[in-house]
Amino acid sequence: MVQLKSVPKPAATEVAGSQRPRPEPDPVHSRMVLAGSPKALTGMGVSGGRLVAGKQQRPLSENRGLETVIGVDERTQILETDKAPWRMVCALDIEAPWGGFVGSAWFAGPRTLITAGHCVFDRSQMGGWATKITVTPGRSGGTTPFGSFVVTRFSTVDQWTDSQNPDYDISAIHLDEAYGDELGWFAIGALTDTELQDQLVNVSGYPFERGGGTQQWWARNRIRAVEPRRIFYDVDTSGGQSGGPTYMIEANGTSAAPLVVGIHAYGTGGTPNSIPLLVNSAPRITPEVVEQIGRWIEQDSGSH
Image (tube, rainbow, N blue to C red; front, side, top):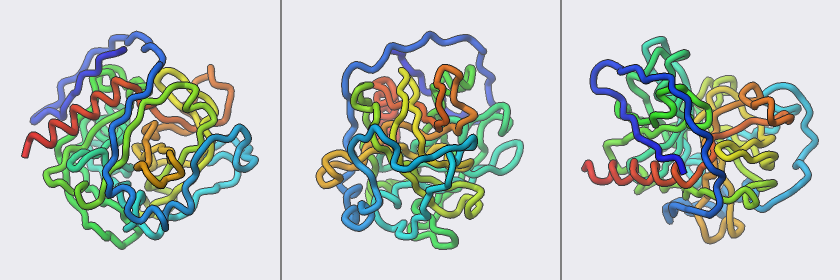
């Protein structure tokens, strides 16, 4: 198992990492789960009517196309963003040396958000580290049911800062207040290949092309392919949804918090040639990712 090393945003100027290659990790062989918050279930009786659970070998619809929206756009705008799990998904307004960007994130603990690595650090697109991020949980256009807050503390992992390897495109946003105590947080799980293959998953976030990153949109479909550090699915997404949760519902959503199994980050253009499918993808939650997120949550809990 690869040992991840957390890399916090430097207090002053960025220190550039080396471009060394990384070994291919071993496949996941066993399940590892961080429990979600009981608050993650509040309102699920209403919101859960949309969410998918279980496995399916056939697609939920026949999608054909060449774009990140695979065929007909099947995303649905979420309006009841004050309910779980939608309120645990956040809109990000990112300021960086080279301009402004939008992204998505989700609660993993009381003071910890998880997002894509390229939402906090991107040497080629943002000019390095984000300078600050305005976070708005459960945003719905001009409605912000839980307010907004500005954050300047971020971390990613060394495999991302060193080479921006898409397999390691993960990061954390560290909050000053325990907003997750009110809103809830997702469970996080490293599952086996067999558990993930054909699993129906949900992806929600804040695309730029729909509402300029202010509206939450959701879609669902199945995992089509599994690699040691990536999962690939035919769920419709577009730019701005990077960092949003790719999550499944266990036990029909009645007794367990929604379980994040990937961090959405890439459209069809990010699919390697080894996967001959029209699919979007996420860095996979593996045991070392679970452990690193757990360390970030513990760090945030102990800093106040």
